[in-house]
Length: 367
Image (cartoon, rainbow, N blue to C red; front, side):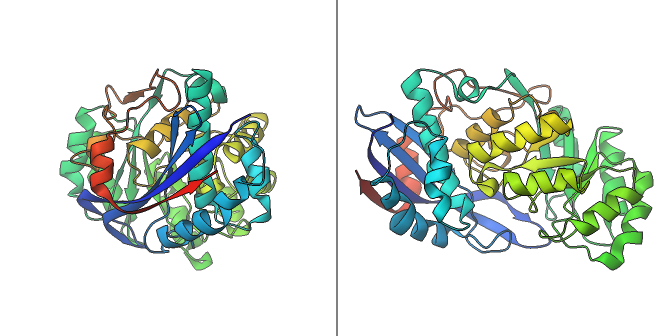
């Protein structure tokens, strides 16, 4: 049984090296919540809430997650026994939505559990890789050719482009002129409408690895329609908020692969269930990114070790976004791959001094 002593939640503010721009929003300063779960022997597990300050990606924000953790989710744990981290999904099932808030405490407890068992999180969840393939995301504000050349030297295995509607071909060809035939995809961020179907099908000759989330998040039908009309793979991101969403997408033929984000689906238990469905359906998975600190990135790297995560994820190195990360062993990319930490839990050491410096408010919940 996992007996918690206390949980500390920190609101942390981290300035990005460069602003990150998508069609839906601009991020200059990354506000995030770091969750520290302590057991009675003084061990600590870390999780990260990946909600943004503004609700441009999902309805959740750092403010809503703070409220949920403080007033609902953590008080529930005073009344329930936790025999295993997988119990958290059922414990929180009476709370509708708020997947990112749930995931922040769930992932912290998974990390704590790994440390209690003296095992890596990779081994605890059944991962099979000692290194994972890394992709990089180029935002709308990047000097695309310069950035692509820099990341090409590091051997990134896949390039994801943020694009403007109607300018996809031009943007893709600019990057292709630098990186050659390395895999390229673009992220639609749900900006396309049904009347854009013909426009999208005309991009089929660009030989893209995939198109991610072209239509709105609640749309299975038009994703299915587009998939039936294109040779280019269709990937779902915002649409998949649970194992049930993944099941429906697979059964309805709405995608060729799925981007799994721990925060978006509510944590490891749901992500592992999605993995089981995908394995049976022989559907490739990949791990998406949310401008995480090294804590969230360490969790993503662990997730990407699962067998069905066969496509390169958004697992760029720490220096991609931060002058100084809040972990002591920044993630680096070598020959397009990131090594999986080998120490217990998420396997990284948190820079407590820097974490406290970046904290703008916090609270502690006792058990």
